[in-house]
Amino acid sequence: MATDTPAPSPPSESTQTPGRLEQSNPDYDPNVVIEAQNLTKIYRDFWGRQKVRALNALDLEVRKGEIFGLLGPNGSGKSTTIKLMLGLLFPTSGRAIVLGQNATDVAKNERIGYLPEESYLYKFLNAEETLDFYGRLFDIPAKVRKERVQELIQLVGLEKAKRRQLREYSKGMTRRIGLAQALINDPELILLDEPTSGLDPLGTRDMKDMILKLRDQGKTVVMCSHLLADVEDVCDRIAILFQGDLKEMGRVDSLLKVSGETQITAENIPESAHEEIRQLIAKHGGQNVVVDNPRTTLEDLFLNIVRESEDRPGMRPAGAAAEKKPSSDQTH
Ligand SMILES: Nc1ncnc2c1ncn2[C@@H]1O[C@H](COP(=O)(O)OP(=O)(O)O)[C@@H](O)[C@H]1O
Ligand SMILES: [Mg+2]
Image 1 (cartoon, rainbow, N blue to C red):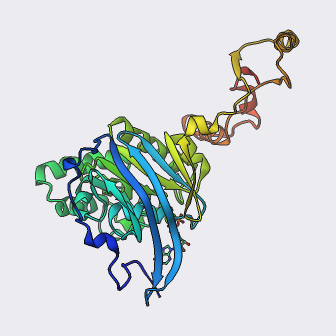
Image 2: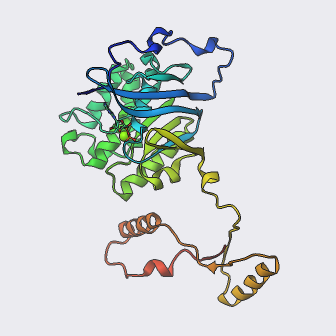
Image 3: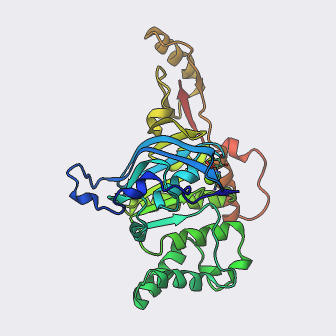
């Protein structure tokens, strides 16, 4: 039997001073919301024998106001990392400082919002009752609670369903109420474990927009996902994990930048000018020139079709998208 709790012999970190305020530390930087140092988690079995090295000597820093993505295939240690940040698990070695406090100090979780991989909410409560319940757990005064419940229901787009019991909710609606629940305490730091799991493209887009909105409000977001497009679209920086090891970390735009190629995009260039452009580039030593229309993403195409259909219900001629955007030409 596997267990999440520390092995029978107490781990070394429990002898440290958990919850020690780092503000007294001269190195403390309030702009660093999470700092993991050599963070390692080995799951043990019931008898304390080592079973799985889920996270191996992770070093990372999450800075205030950014959206940080943990990317990796199933089993790479993403959920383990998030649970270590919350103090739901004890590290086998290393440590994490979260909001200036040791991650094992659960008192700091009052300032954190957490959307677990699977939300366990009471199925017989409706959205308003659910959020009110969690607001009470955080001792939010009745008046503030009432306002916040309505604000959050609006933020996650559940106004029409707010009086329906959660057992009637679709997967997408369940994810929305899960996010609202994670935000009830107006947290500074939000940890989202696979926020788009099980959502259709519309739900996914909405979730991503909500995450971006949270950043605009000054929150720090850490999300983990195995879905490349989700992470690419919303994260400022990412860490790529594989089998518990950190493989890559950096800004998404610089990690994805193809060095050695130049992209020039322009609208309304006639076909007749393409050859001239090609020759000009060749004159400057450019090689393997491609003059072409840029491609949109399948997500954008799909969302355009759905939104158009909402405005104008009925059949849409096939290939209509090809006559519309993108109208610009692109030079690689
Ligand atoms: N409670 C547990 N007991 C034993 N092994 C676990 C436990 N939770 C996760 N693991 C193992 O740790 C590894 C990392 O898991 P996890 O952090 O859930 O990965 P991810 O979230 O990236 O899919 C996997 O091999 C998984 O099987
Ligand atoms: Mg996981």
